[in-house]
Length: 367
Image 1 (cartoon, rainbow, N blue to C red):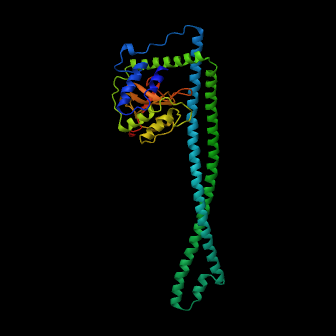
Image 2 (image 1 turned 60 degrees about the vertical axis):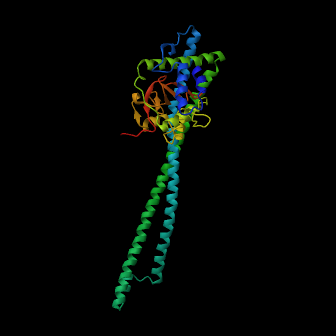
């Protein structure tokens, strides 16, 4: 794509140069909104001249569908992965709690044993009887206090033993449940990984059967479709009221994201050499000092949402009804994103895919 080749030229942009170079790239690709002239607008793709072109467009749609299915499965995979990590952490915490409880139990058992030994050395005479048989009134009163304290100590040890044994039974049951849940989550994770790999492999196999010229035409078809969708978005006036300015953190996130332009998309990758779509936005905002959720779906669910007209550079644009794709808004109607396997991190139109909504990593939740 011409836009991608031009986009590589803006690698490593910093500060004020970013806005200027972004405009240059967008003008070259026809993605710039607002002040763009009619001459800068991208023409709609021409109708397929022959059956071969129609077949290639069908291939494009099939490949796109396979990659979209893989992105949907990615959410299930990442959710299972998070649960696996959570269960593993809980099991470790339980193990430490059980070890500490077992240590306490050993101490209580020694105390109970000492009390039993003391009673044995006293000849097994109940403390109450020894109290009654004492002829010394002062000793009687002193012994009464000792007996009371001794009885309380025995009851306390027995009560603690009973409570601790009950706790240990509960810990054991909880640990057993956690292990079962861990295994179930691992199976979900493996199933999701297989589905993802199957979809990606099928898409790659479909594309690999194309001749070199057809692959070039396929990429051109993808670009034309993106430009057509972008133009419709611009024509709707969506960009007209967007005037937001990037925060300092937003500028840092943009600087990181744009410096990755040209790096390959790899499913599940979070840098530094390859990225998937949410891996890129995750690392960009980490570089800006903000920790955000790993997946596009969780970014959509957890981050503060803002109206499209209030969008500003650095915000994340979430795509498709299932929130399965994400890009970072740069301004002037453009985003930087990691598109799909076989493609590289690039700049494209913010309206080149169906927009679900916008979230703000450096915003505050209002509800």
